[in-house]
Image (cartoon, rainbow, N blue to C red; front, side):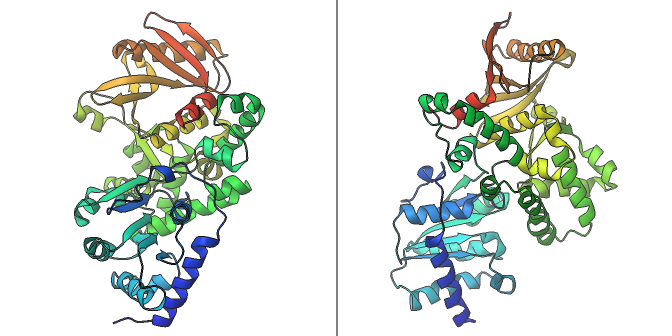
Length: 428
């Protein structure tokens, strides 16, 4: 039985029109999406990272006219109408009043509907529609969801803009070596802005830091507090601010527990909720022993440097950590399996990249190597990692310095982070 039929007609009309009216910038993920298979495609990532735009870019790419249904479930109507039945009602109303030839379904912020998996499984099993969904919870990537959809879905992570995408948003061409040479000054200037404002699309376009603060509170309130029924919202906010203020640092659960006067259980739960909502992510210490790896403290990073800078206390003043966070994000976006390294004698390297069972690369990040003590420490830590994992080359990413040095363990390439990041993002 369909309730609120007139309202559903208006909602469908509004959202379908909005899907075709927005001005859109291209995103690198779109060509990677499987648009032809029967599996459900799900886009998962932080709030305001561009998932809605990617759904609309798919609509544009497929040249769809009137045989698609697009709904954003953050529409206020769905606050009170959020059962799985509403999904079936939307499809029935569309078929009755808009087009009986419905072929594509796009559902945005799907996690707002309780039991949505059941309704989608029903449509998917009927094999009538190609379905795309987007959501702001890592639960959509979980094995739990794979089970509920009987494994037949394809997940893609959506992150804030890469630096290459940021440059495209700013109208700076940087795909080819020629373009990067000709636009070198613009690239450096925009990299400074990229570190400060980050890659959330609207903030990148407008430069408004206040937007990022709003995103932070939206993540806390909508994606964590409301959904998890958090009672101590003050402690949750303090944890979020603390994590962003201490991005690119090793953080222990014990320190969070003591700082916020929480039980171990609550501190652990809050931390996992914030990771689930894509506010932060962590990088484990490398160990061949999974038990030791699990026990060791993890390094925590912000999902966006601009978000961290807008919310935290003086994060931008520590340029080295800002740069390290940007590199961590690039590695995350590339799907790399990453760890940090701690060896004998307190030697450290910021990142180890593992492929299959072997460590393939060691990376150090440092704003500048001009200071002799800093240079010696960074090279020593990287060389220790190279020696332990039998790597013939190592990489130090800086803000602007570039050289090649030789050590007993092998060559160390020192390179500006902009060159490396653009190379990782697909620039030729």
